[in-house]
Image (tube, rainbow, N blue to C red; front, side, top):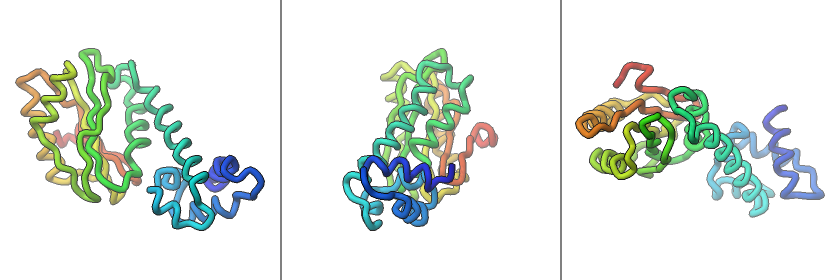
Length: 201
């Protein structure tokens, strides 16, 4: 099913007696894909003709449902044995954000997810990260391992030197306190990069 047809079905609930095909096509033309439409900021959505509160509500519900489903596949399962679901989840919640978010997945000693927290919100190309606060929060939650996640709003998930340096600082700070960093995943519209798999950490 093409993206515009799926979007057309979603929009049907916002317009009970109106053809939604043209609006669906306009939204796809403006934002590029179904995923980018449901992730678009509300002010930009409302720039499109016929998009009002009812349409925004429908798109918000679909996005929330998709994220809830992705997260349910991760909770209470060993994260390292369900890595594909972890990647799907972090991409669903962050790949289409328009500002950088720094998220941490906190794991217990069996590598099960015990908390998922956004630790920082930044600009289009930077999020401040405080190494001490990351490790402190892991200790508060009795977490023995963490997975760092952040997004690149540019779409390109290639790690910068600053990304790598910051990750290494967190690894060094956590090591003597028994907090391991399993990975740092960078997500973007063009995919994701695992620093561990690229041997950057």
